[in-house]
Length: 212
Image (cartoon, rainbow, N blue to C red; front, side):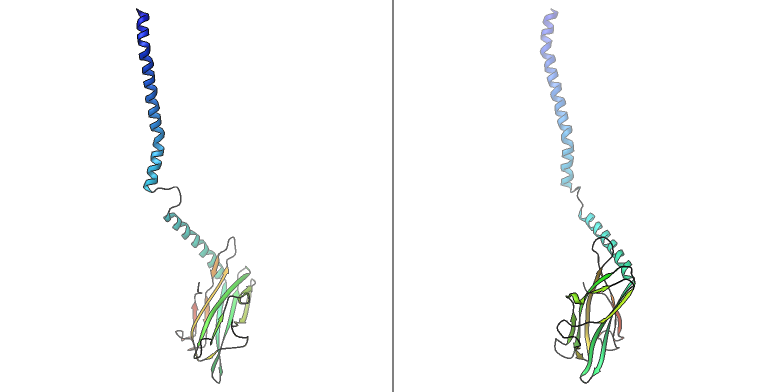
């Protein structure tokens, strides 16, 4: 009798074991799917491990602040002046332009510069324009000052436009800050001219930021 009961119970025990194993496997599969589901949910909600637009903006602002600090430290020791001259002649005034660069920093600078000064009355060619040539760059050693005429890109040396007023003056000037990487620093300039010669600047002295 005992042997018969044992034979009857054996299939039930095997079936129970199989049922228990299937249940554990299902729960395990459900648990392993949970992280993926959460990951998919995060992706759908917009949470990404990469840098967001706000993150990129913050990094850009930090980089610009570091570059501005490097340029500020350099430019506090550099002075650029453009002097507009007017020499009386029979037809009016011969207009000239001189550049003065003072480098009190400890770095050797290469300053690229260019611009345009328009003179009236006269044709469109009655102007001083320069830039875009290696001759318009200035190597400046530490603790030195350089002075020189700004020559015109389409006129021979010694030529000066003739007129009685300067209608506009625009320039660019930049140099790299010392240190690792390339950080271009725009150099502001002091402009000096005879009073009343330059339109919108009757005093003949002002500070101007460089064009990009």
